[in-house]
Image (tube, rainbow, N blue to C red; front, side, top):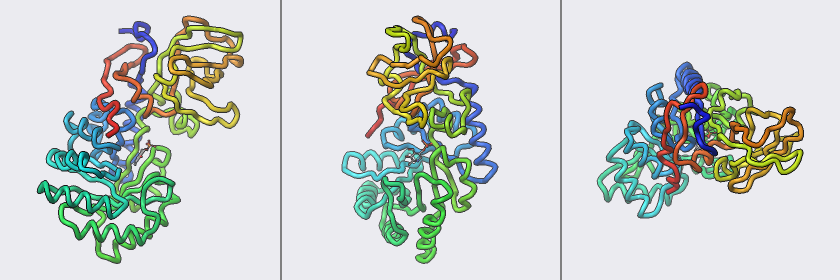
Length: 353
Ligand SMILES: Cc1ncc(COP(=O)(O)O)c(C=O)c1O
């Protein structure tokens, strides 16, 4: 099928760009002896996860149990990390069931989480790996090395949990002193840390500056997005995720309306220093400002475009944040050189629990 035959709006993944990204990130991590553990929350696709495993990934990262259940059921079951505090009876029952089908590690940053994991796994007669989440970026994670040491000691002492090390998000080189301080606590207590897990695509190519890292979680690298264009880790061709849209109205000389809004691109905004907030980059009209959207209407300032888009023109838009963009779609077209090679499901769409 030719891409012209696809109805719009439609999610696309350009396979040349995707494969290029999968290869260049895997090559970097293999060269530096760091395990790549892709975060599948970006694409949520079994097909892409299998491509990542075939290229040498050591396992996968899933943000939620539901994502992990989908991946494991689909055969991506070698080794799974869920970097999230898992609590409550409903989730702990699912977690213990999942430990029977894969090697599972979860993150914890409190005694409450660690004790809950231990009680549930012990009752079910199974065990789960635990990494202590280190903080510092305003989200979860312990903020002192002393607390990291205390939680590691607790995890090491309880039944049903196996202390595996630490994780931190994100992991630019600046986090190294804190990471070293935390690992010194492990050393002082004689505790193991076979897993030292860093993460985030923008920090991927500096991972070798933190020799303590044994593995790295990157999510967005296969497809990029506007942020990666600006950081220059990805070219337009390497931003493999796009939303195909049609110009449906030209209400004024400066405004074009496309048939994709927040329900196809997601509502994520990118703050551009010169051009204000943007919702996407239109490949065919790079001077256009995709400045706003309602659910089904993309509002684009085309005053700087020459020529300007006409009613009926079809364009490919690189979204700001690929992860929620995938979550808006059941399926995406895998395209190569304007041919549709396949339609692939977004298997773990909406798996937020
Ligand atoms: C815990 C964790 N690890 C890894 C990642 C992957 O980061 P990125 O999407 O920048 O590749 C994320 C993304 O939010 C994350 O939350």
